[in-house]
Length: 233
Image 1 (cartoon, rainbow, N blue to C red):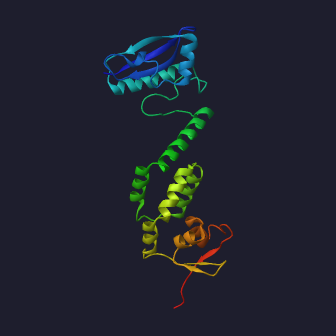
Image 2: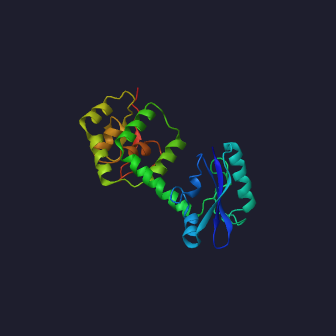
Image 3: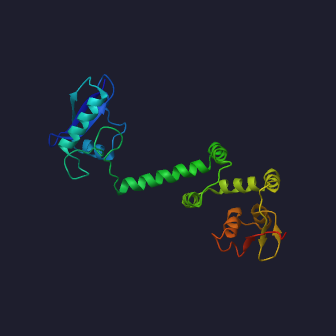
């Protein structure tokens, strides 16, 4: 059954944290390493602390309500309302959590690391490809995806592997046999290519760049300009 506890800093003999434990034995109240904030650690390392068990063997709903009541009673340091280093209002989820500048920087770094690992993970790549196959993205979705990918650093190994896959005989043949290919005309050399992919392979430029030029989202790439070619009937 859940229990509710508070931590008391020894220098001022005042509460600085209120929490809930879900075990019958109030183990969580005495844990010092799992899921403790840096703020909590700073207080404990400098001043020491004691544990006060407020309620034992209560229902989870009762525990959540009491946690919110005590946090409201003692107030939060980050909001300037009291003495607690809690960063939420208690109860469910992260209600009332306020990210500071350091939190935002750390979350940004973690997101970039996750993004890089995803782009280099073959299983993730295959899963995303299968989930998106046959779906047509809106212009807004394309722009959001492009903006995200621009902010994720890609390793040289990843880029080389991607280029090898695109230039493999299987990929080339598959691209050539697609029934929905649109021919493109290169305005620099007046050559008509079967598709954007064919033009990118022949000229050694980005496939997406050729496509964006044809749709008017990009003016040129490496000096090349393209338009969709429509055969006269």
